[in-house]
Amino acid sequence: MIHGIDVFKAFQPHRGDAIVTHSGTAGRHWAEVSTNPNRDLRLQSSMGQTISAAFGVALGLPDEKVVMFDSEGALLMNLGVLASIAGKSPKNFYHFLLDNEIYATTGGQPVPNARNIDYAGMAKSAGYASTHHFTDLEDLVTSMEAIMNEVGPVFISIKITPEVQNLPMALRDGSSGRDRIETIRDFQKEMGIETT
Image 1 (cartoon, rainbow, N blue to C red):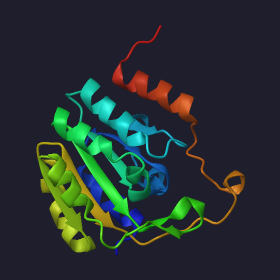
Image 2 (image 1 turned 45 degrees about the vertical axis):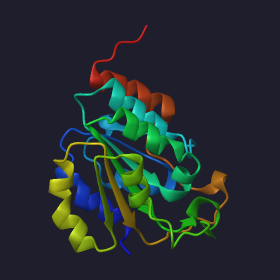
Image 3 (image 1 turned 30 degrees about the vertical axis):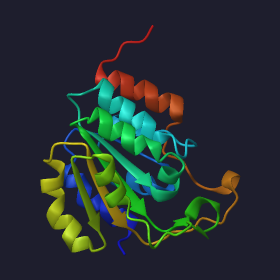
Image 4 (image 1 turned 45 degrees about the horizontal axis):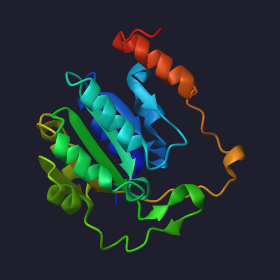
């Protein structure tokens, strides 16, 4: 398995100006690696729905690459989104799934049938333009540039090492420096989106 932070380190040199968002613990280390926080959409506390928001951003901003770092637990809460994404086929959408086989946020309970689910196969069957599956960091690193040059929607499933959080939610350090409202305001300013 691959450490989550190593996924981000492999991705960052190929980010360019892509908009990046993540679901819960799938993005735990992203803030440590990101070099363009005004293009990071951190939508905390929206497990299962961040993928729909990222999909909407990809549709609304078709000239921008949109990258989603998802978790299998969150995706399982909203599997129908795979068909919606494939149906609309946003060419600018890159869906990374960080699969640790557990619900890390709530204490490490196993995801049902975790070892047998083929998420890349699901995405392919739903109609994603391209799908990939990685269990080896070197393979991921050497493939990242080509993946980020593919026409979307692209689905990338990556087995990662679990990092269980056992502290109560109120005691965890989940700070990114900005709350959801600040994140959206900064993103709108970065993208030149005027609000009234």
